[in-house]
Image (cartoon, rainbow, N blue to C red; front, top):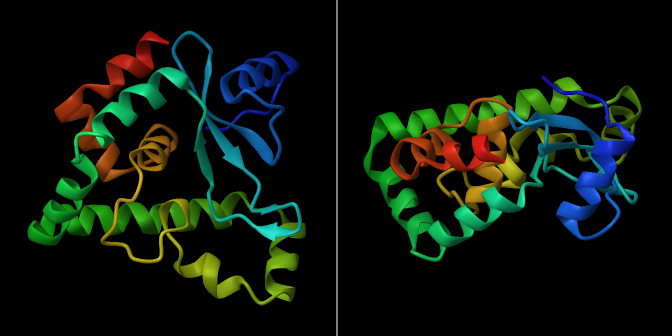
Amino acid sequence: MTQSLSQCDIDIITTQLGRTPTGISAIAHYSPNGIPQVLEMETWVFDQPFPTLYWLSSKAIDKALAKIESQGVVKELEQRIRDDEELREAHYASHRDYIARRWAVMSDKHKAIIEAKGFTHLFDKLGIGGIASWDQVRCLHMQYAHHLAGNNAIGRLLDEEYNIRAVADAE
């Protein structure tokens, strides 16, 4: 469930990002303590297509995921996706969910721009964070942002195997 931004949210996000936020349409997920953790982004930013719908703003989660990424987990997960048909289908379903959500929240104005500029096909095929090759994970941060905001197989694995949810809930 997304919520509009309050001035308090903007102040917190500015601190989290270290800069004034741009291109945010709503907060997609808050911690149990009311801290914004996932931002829902506009699909057209600075006169450019922006296929990343969910942006992780939480520094605590960012740090935990960066540590996991530094251990080579992204490549391990990509291999698991290739080897495990059930995981692969769940991961593909996550991409389809992301695309559907992106179209569902896109403003009519941005839909018209994207159609007029000929980018519709990109927004139909680019998955989580703009990934074209759905066998890739690329970045745990965007996978986990989608998990907190919606439905993501890799995010579920991160909770099950690395207990990232405890980090998210403690913020």
